[in-house]
Image (cartoon, rainbow, N blue to C red; front, side, top):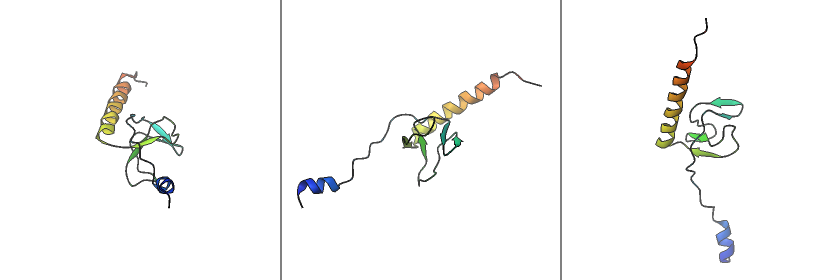
Length: 84
């Protein structure tokens, strides 16, 4: 075998995204507010509001973004006027 063929058979280097997850995101017509494990052995999240194939594995950093999102949502809910 030539070295060109051997190099071609090697899998590409995995690129790990540093972009933050987007919450909530829609995948499979379902809105998700946290990381999911659908079709995966590990939790992952979308990098787009509507899943476009861009994703990343969830890490401690992702959990921090999620907590910030949930805190903002909670404070937003408390600011809504009470309707009777």
